[in-house]
Structures are given as structure tokens and as C-alpha cells.
Image 1 (cartoon, rainbow, N blue to C red):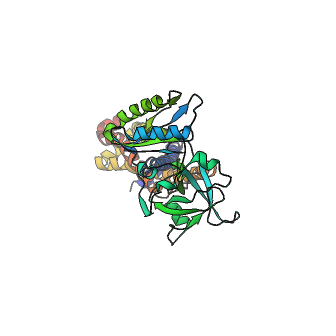
Image 2 (cartoon, one colour):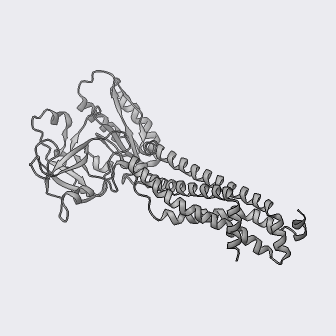
Length: 405
């Protein structure tokens, strides 16, 4: 049995053995949490907005002069945009996903202001909003043309009356569990009630990462903002997306030369920009993992090579006494396995400690237990691969040459 001689040898080389154990422990603790961070970022990057992102173009407009009738200009813009080749529909909305803006509102089920409240993302939009955003109605209906109001008209009302609202499935299930939301009333736009006329399957928060594990509560009111209070969203044939993007800017500026189109983009481009930091985090954490594993592997190789050199005479003696190459190889692999095991056990405790720090200071979720065996297997495999070359060199030493050294 090789364990007793190995333990005896390690006791004589405590410093070198301790350094490898500490290195493996640190690598284990950091790698497990880095993998967890990568998993969290990948979950964010894979978020499905539920929108036909490849078909959507967003056109924000700024006014540089005193525009007379913004509602009339908004109507002219939408009419012209809908006539462009390749355009399926167009609408004006107050906010858009990935747009770095967010409008939210408290919603109540009853008139009682002290009753339970639900926070929801607050969308307003004009005609064709549901079709343009590609929202799928799972219950109820879309807004009727006569139900839309301009935001300027609503703002002039002392007691705004927006009688209809469409909510997403998440909000419907939270506010009206076990029953149909259609026909229910809620208070979210002013002090007057609005009737739920439809439920859409998916409608996300404009900041998807801010929603917990679902889309978050979201609602749409039939209140048409002007170009000053919203952005144009155009649904197009993907093959003509770039052409529509260029043509839209020219049309709007021709209708009123005092306006300019500011950063018209596809929704796909907006998504890429929105998640840029998350992708950078994934690459950074991946680089940290690779660097740590490489440094640990070189540390194991260096120590194993040093010990092979130091034990050349011992190897020759064992070979002369009948030890096979396989036994010499297994000796060094078992030695590395023992060191790796001690380091991994210490590293598991360190991983939990680091996870607690991240939970306390950065609101990260607890490190799942599944990462511990995965990290252990990775480091055991790394250790065996790293020690293989020095161990093979030791096993290949001729007994006579080893005894002469």
C-alpha cells in the first residue's frame, strides 16, 4: 500500500505540500462561485422578451423647434410609416424594452387607497400597439379604435378616465388567482377604475433583469403618446429592416424639418447594447476560471517535477526491488489525489464563505450545491492530468541510472 510512504514523504515536505493544497483550495472556492456568476449572467442573456425582435425597428424623434400640433404630426408620421414597403404595422408607445427608460405604477383592485397594491410596468400606446409588439392575447380582446385617447387629451382631464386596460398573464395570475381577469376592474390610471378587457401571454418589464423570475407585472392603456412623449415602433419584414430604418428617418424629417430622428435602431441592436455588460462579465469570469486552472496546473506540474528530481534515488531503489512502471506512476497520481482532496475540501468551505459574502453585499442568490461536486471533479481531473507527465518521466527512469544519481 502506497499511502503510508506518501504520508511520510509529505510530512517531510510540509511547505511545498501546503502551498499546493492552499492553491487548490483557493482555485476551488473561486471557480465554483465564478461558475455560479456565469450561470446567472447566461440566464439573463437568454431571457426571451416575447417580442419579434428581428422584425422591430425603434425610431425616437426629437423636436428642435416649436411644433404646433404634436398629435397631428404624430398621426401624419404613423400614416407615412405604415405605407413604407415591408412595413407590417407601426405604433407609438411610451416605452420599449431595452430602451433604458421605465415607467411603473401602483395598481389596486379596489377603490380603497390603503388596500393591497401591485407594482406594474406602465405601457401606453396608440393603434396597432398589440399587433406591432407581437403580443398574443390568451384571453379577451384588443382595444377598439374608439377606445384610444391622446395623452394630451387625457392630461387635460381633471379626473382622467381611461376605461380599458390589457394586462399580462403574470399580473393576471397574481391579482386574480384562480379566476378570469377579463371583466375585473383595477385602479392604476388616476382615480377612476379601468376594466381588464384582455390578457396577453408575454409582456416584459422594460428592464428584463429587474423582473424577478418571471416577466413582472405589466399593463397597457389605450393612451396614445405623441412623438415627444414616446417612440415609434415599426414591425417590418426582416429582409427590409435596414431599408425601412433609413427611410423612416427621412420621412419624419420631411414631414417637419424642425425634428430629427435620434438613434433609430433595430430592437436586436438595442438588446445587444443592453446586455453588453452581462456578456463582458461572462467573458471576464471565464477568463478568471481559465487563468486559475492554468496557474494551478503549472503549480502541480512544477511541484511534481521537483519531487521526481528529489526522489530519483528512491525511485531507483523501488524499481530495483521489483516495482513496475505502473506502480511508480500510480504512486505519484495517488499522492496528487490526496493533496487535491485536502485542497478541495478546504475549498468547498471557502466557496460557501465567498458565496455568503456575495449574498450579503451584492444580493446574489446562494451558491447551489451542484457546483461543489462539479468543481471537485474538475480539479481532481486537472490534478491527474497535470501530474501525469512528471509521473511518466519518473516511471521511465532505468533503475541503474536512478541509483547512480
